[in-house]
Structures are given as structure tokens and as C-alpha cells.
Amino acid sequence: MNTPGTALTVGKELVCFCTRCKMDLGHTIMSMMGGMPARVICRTCKSEHNYKPKKGVKEPGAIAASRGSPGTTTRAPRESKAEKTVPVELEWMKQLNSNTKAIRQYAANEHFLVGDRISHPTFGEGIIQKHIFPNKMEVLFRMDLKTLIHAPKPA
Ligand SMILES: [Zn+2]
Image (cartoon, rainbow, N blue to C red):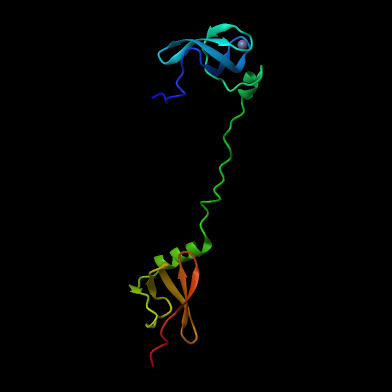
């Protein structure tokens, strides 16, 4: 598992917790046990002690401070901004639910009636909202209201 070059060996230096200085400091490994440093010497206070992993403490007294005061929770109030449904999608769902017509494939050379359900290759399923003279129609799709071309009403 150890990457060559970063493997810990006796005589190597590493940053770990000094039990005397009470902070993370550079130590020299004096002995190893099971792939982990066993005894280390602090390069600051020169004391030899058992290896203790880094605690992320840079200054004495910071341990207590980093624990946080009791009663304080990190739980933030949940706000569901992203879960809000887009109004157009809501309307789209409402119309689809109350529409019992068969879905027609959209084609620019066909005529569609208001209320028809169409399937568009890009926009998906939609409902015709109104005709725009002479050959356009407004269609409600899931994400947006689109204006599509269709054939004028057959004579
Ligand atoms: Zn020390």
C-alpha cells in the first residue's frame, strides 16, 4: 500500500502530535511498529515519546476551541430552493393529466387543433395552447412555451 518515497521509515521526519508541546510538529521517527511509527523525537522540544497522529492543532489551546461549544449543532435549516417546481412545468402536468387525447407526432406539414397532445423530438410532450395566424401555434412543453410551425387549417 505504501507509495515508494513516502513510506515511513526510521530516521524519516513527519509531522505528528507532540505530547509535550501539545501541537502538531515535525518529529523524527525513532522506531516503527506494524508499518506505523512507534517512537518519535520532537524536533522542537527534543523529547522522545510515543507516536501520536496529527490532530490538526497548530497552537496550544486550540484543541479545546476546535471542539466547539456544547449545544451548538452544525445542522443548518433546510431550504428547498432547488426542489421548487417551475410554474410552467406545473401547468404542463395539470394539462397533461386532464388531457385524454391520443398523442400525435409533431410534423410541420400537419394541422393541429387547440388541445391536441403532440410529441416533439426535441421538446418532448406538449399541448397546443392556441393558433397563431396563419400557420403557427403555441405549444406548452414541460420546460417552456414554444411557438411551432404547422400546416394551416385545411380548407
Ligand atoms: Zn515537542
